Length: 289
Image 1 (tube, one colour):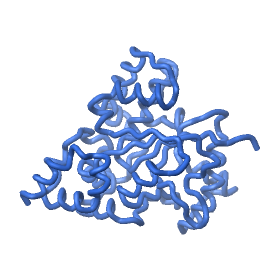
Image 2 (image 1 turned 120 degrees about the horizontal axis):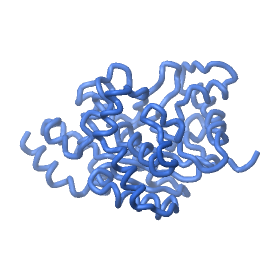
Image 3 (image 1 turned 135 degrees about the vertical axis):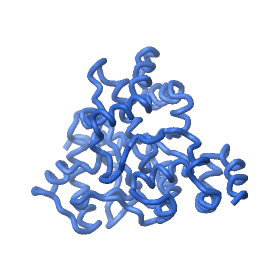
């Protein structure tokens, strides 16, 4: 078989901006007027939890009972995903790039590169809580638990693990061409952040007006309006709104000092590396508990 090293992973912990990044790339890279709405992003990208690819790999409707069954079929499903387009293409994942049951969850022989999107854990926690249909303390607990997984009713999983481990394995994976985007930078400087990604990493010549149009079309308000009008097929069951706040700094209103202290204690080395600007304020906030 020809070289299948075609997948450019769009990797993130849930609620870190993956949907926004997929939409931005679609609006910039697809012909004008052809970019899909939020419910049809698979026209541009695909994801590693697609039931149809698992069914094809299994040779029958896939129904997994265990992680091991999922891992065995995942290898074939990912080969089909890699081969589904002739050139490099984007694939969404929330999995860690680790080995399980002697298999690579993110196989190097199918991987061209990765764009890793991260979001600070203080803002992530309340958003993840809504996503999980849980209270914030439970969401923080799951973010701190090395065996945290999400799954579909048919047994297709996302291996999340701890928030800090997720960042570490993706940003330090040996031999992986990668580009890291912080959600907060995408919010505050969308044009600069996307220009760097497009020009320096994807080697795409940037058209300024086209980029401005893509940013406007995928603003949080625009995507929230799409969800209100069309619904959002990727929204977990029971979740009121997928696009709820989409801001940086909401943790100041949503978290207690005790919760902020707990997140700091759990993830301090990763915060020192990736979010040093948040250390002083979160320490002061936690101290008022």
